Image (cartoon, rainbow, N blue to C red; front, side):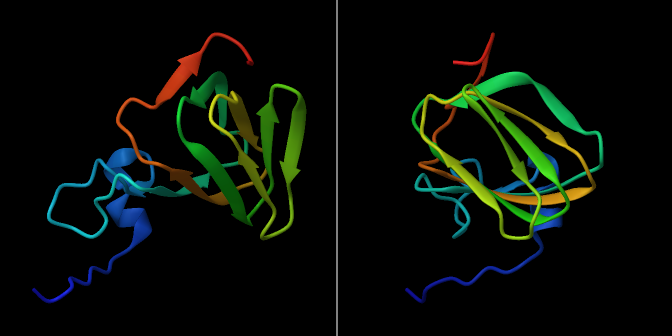
Length: 125
């Protein structure tokens, strides 16, 4: 069988899943459906924030600033992504929340892609 090629737009393809457009949640058959990785492309308006702490039990997370200014709060430190290409990467079990200080575009990659892996936590852990 010929390998399949899919193309599209991350804004459109991720619109129904908060920006996530690659991962276990994509309906087969589609090369974007994989348990190996999740990819998210999101735009946040200045002032958008996630106040609730969340963490992934098994996935490692990488967030890269495409444009804007974005503050990540982790249990033991605060990271300001302010220059295009700034990134933060954290292990499973690390809680996080965030604030978009300016209109921002963020690319987030998580691996592996597992149902139910992202959970809300009551506090930083």
